[in-house]
Length: 471
Image 1 (cartoon, rainbow, N blue to C red):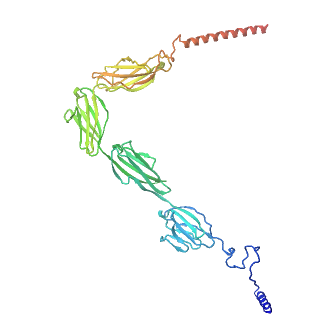
Image 2 (cartoon, rainbow, N blue to C red):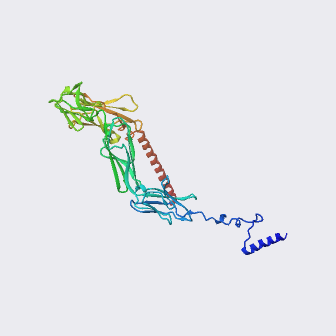
Image 3 (cartoon, one colour):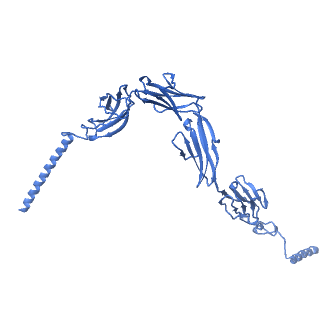
């Protein structure tokens, strides 16, 4: 017992000297700040998590300039810089992980500096605190002029077959993003045409699509261009200037075909199945795409059907022209309303031979039978005849509609009938010009008489009242 007491006194003496007592808490009433048993590992002894004070920004800079991407951090941390969506490593802590000498990082505030900026630097840059999964992202855009990066077709010169489809497309890069459009210069239009699109298509190519197609990338006042040439090949394309040509005996006649052909090795004229050989009567000429057959001192036997034929390695094509003595089909020159609402129609007739007569047909739109007129022939001028006829047609129903047509005759026969021309009725029998005794006038006269009687009655009453007042 005496030895136990001595041991207790020894322990108390040690405590008094060191002024420290090591023991476990008696119960759970102590709070979490108790740390006597784990002085080096309590959670309150850990430093605060590192955090990034900078925020992600967008940088737009010129080529060749220097840009600084901030990543200011509060607290101790290991920082990683990476580039692009795939997060290619640039720096990890103090270690550089890229061979690009233009990239440096400040060890004090982790600012990433890029010198002599070029187009390849346009990307996103990530600054990340390892372990904390805290990061920011900067976007770097390097200003650049417009650059055409892709065209369809790719080649500058292209050969395509007639009848096939084609698509034109153009892509361009630059900061700011350039505007892209096309300028077409082909045979579809007279002169260049601008298309406000980066792509367009043709379903079936013809010779008219041959030409130059220019992609334009435009940015502010700076532009860049790429010209694509298209040549459409296939069997010849033959067009006639006019399907019907009017002439007369002893006049010179001229027939014209326009032929567009790649590698045409044969172009000739035919009549009645026989090839025409040039001589004093027939002259064959070529002016660019125009192929001309000239007939001197036209004879009656020259009237008929002519065919111009063109052939190349892809096939043969032709166009037909009818040379005739009869007048050309009359065409509408003018339609107007004359005096008293009458409709006036003027037709134009082309005829080398003198016009002998006209036949005008007209009828109400709802009728079956045509009425016929034979107007007087007026002299023409250099093969051009104008005929004006005024229709004086009474109408029982307001705004009745009629239609008319005409054909002309010369020494070789009648022309084709003209197209039908609709016109409103009007004239001496129309509602616009009523006759005396018509219901409208009778109603007007009756109304006038009743008004006069009313005025006389009022005057009589006023006179009686005045006389009585004076008494």
